[in-house]
Image (tube, rainbow, N blue to C red):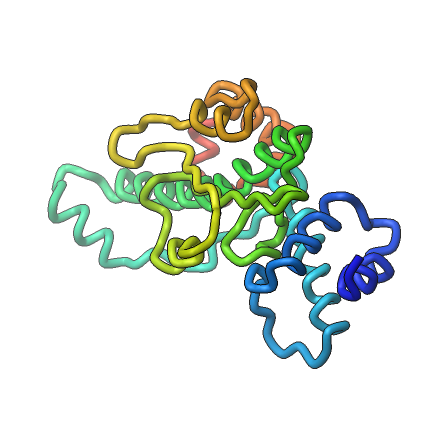
Amino acid sequence: MSEAENIAKVRAGMFWNDSVKTVLSVCCNSPELFPYLKVCNSRLDYINKWLNKYFGGYNNRASKRTSKKIGTVSDEIIDTILSDRLPTLSNDGINHIKYAHRLSMSAENILGLLLEEYLAEKLSSYGWHCAWGTTMNKIDFCTEKGDLLQVKNRSNSENSSSSSVRKGTTIWKWHRINAKNGKHYWKELNQLIRCSNLSEEDFATFVRQTIAENPAALYVEDSKYWQQVQS
């Protein structure tokens, strides 16, 4: 065990487990996988902040988090655009559209978290550990052997910076859905992990159960529009 791992084990105490150990060990073996953390004055300081990121991500997973209100306000010019293009829309109809859009944005904001937690639960029995809290540089899962997996929800969600980390590095990449045609890629992930129990239907079941047990995961604005829908 490296010095960094010994420090982390002491600092984590009762929360030290195989997943923390594996993610940290893989990073120690390939230091370029460590994420950049601002203003770290020492190795001890870095390890403390790294552990805070890991457990912060784990404790804020979809099944436990309380999502916050969207921190932006609607741009009033949107009303003008909609009413000019669709003049038969009433002000109430425009507000319905805007609030529905904000609710959809809230749902999209937690989709990645739901996918991450689903995979963390399903892949753990196959030796894959989640790098909670983005504690690996653009990597989401790893194994003790150092296998690396980058997960994206949609085929168009990878940017150039996340792509560049794979140059010269053996990293498996998987996305759940093709953004252009809606095709799902669970079969490919099953083949990669060598399992057979991952599917869109099973993921949907997980999502329904998670939201039912923790409705606070999805922030819903206090609006008369949702009261009307639910009444």
